[in-house]
Structure formats: structure tokens, C-alpha cells
Length: 318
Image (cartoon, rainbow, N blue to C red; front, top):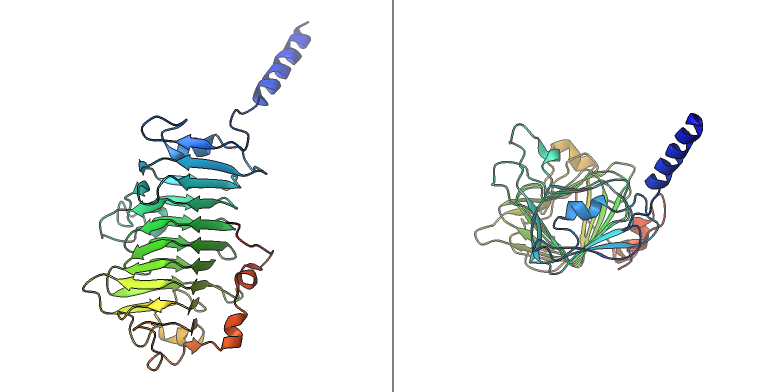
């Protein structure tokens, strides 16, 4: 009898553990600071999503300021976090590298570890004072898509943190001061606005040698704050950093030489490319000799499909 009772208890416990998660479905979850949604914080909505979902799940975030240091964990897939209004739906935090010797890589406001995650119509902000590196977005997952988002910060705004991962940014606004788009991932920036807040460097790619593409900026617009006069398109954080600007509008604040080597020996290895850019900063006559202008044929071969066909094929679905 005792043994039967124990088996019954064990079975009931197992059934309870397997009870349906009320959020285990493709329905939309609503987050609202004013209490009109199912949750008041984005982290709470992420917490109830099932691991390794095979369906598309939307977390709709109403207008408001969400002060959260947010992680999308690696076991979550196929989630879309969609804001009600890009400029009025804000995820914000204020860590910087010199708080308790935190260092750059723990300062993120949003860290995305999962694969196949999409963000739309939302602002990601690190509003720390200008006292050190302060990451707004830190990515580690593969096949990540960001559409009509704003990324606000100073130094190191976006860290694309894992080699071999693919990121797609479309119609986004990205601002910063120094190296504010940096890391080893392959990332395509389509029709984005890049705003330079001080004299410094836009990108700091650390693309591995064996990785054919790093950062590709296509049809983007580079702008600068009043008083800014000397902006570099990039400097290589590691020897084989890859960055391409093509079909972009480059403001007059871009330095005539375009690029900086960071360390002299990287002039031999850095992959810095341009094609068909326009604007006052696009003149090529004084570019550093170790950068290169692509031919029309070479540029025609750099497509989304080609750049994102690495270990597997991927085309962002919008």
C-alpha cells in the first residue's frame, strides 16, 4: 500500500510538472507599465515563454520606459519583441565599465543569447554618463533581426559579440561616440542612420581571418552632431577586421583618409572596403592606401544571400 501511494504521488507530481503552460502557444503576450497588459516588465514575459519554441511568439510592448537589464536566454527561439512606438517604447539601463570595475562586457542593457530573435519598433538605450564603455545591445545569438529600432549610447553602443553569428539591422538609428559598433559577428546594416556624437571612430570590427564578411553597411546615412569634425569610418579591433560601406551617404565630417589602422601592422591585414558612396565625405582621392574601392562586379556579388550563407543559409524574414 505504501509503495502504491508513493507511485501515485510521483505520478501526480509528474502530471503537474507537465501541466500546460498557459503561454505555450503562438498568441501574443502584452506588456504594459500601466498594468493594462499581462505583465508590467519585459523580463516577466520572457520568463513564461517555453524553451526552444518551434512557433513564432510575439511579445508586444506598449509605450513606456522599461528600466530593465534584460537577457533573452539561449534556450529561447522564435521570439519577436515588438514595441508600440519606436521612440516611446524604451528599454533603458545605465551601467558603464568603471562601476565597480565592471568592464565593458557586463554593461549591456539588452543581451540576446537566443537564436532567431526579432526586435521591432523599440529603443534600446544605455544612458550611463560618459565615464567609460557602456553597451546598449550585446548579441551572442545567430539569425537576429532588428527592424526600425533605435540604439542609444556613447562608447560601445552595439557589441556584436560572437564570431559566426549573423545579424540584420534594417531602418535602424544607431548613435554613439567611440567604436560604437564593434565585435566579430557578421552584420548587415540596411538603410540605417548612423549618428556620430563626437570626433572618433564608428566601427571597430574584430572579424576572424577565416570569416569572409564582417560589417556591411548598405544604403545607410552617416550624420554627425554639431561641432564634430573628424570621424573615421572604422579601425580594426583585431587584425582581420572587415567593414564595407556601399551605396551610403557619407557626411562631410568623415576624415579624407577614411580609416585608421589602430596598430600599424594591421594595415597589412585589415579588410576595409567602399563602393559607390556619395556625399561630402565620400571622396576617395585621399583614402588610406590599404583600404580598397570595390569594382562594380565585386560589389554585385555582395548580397544578403551571399553574406548570410555561412554554415547554413539564412535570409531574414520581415
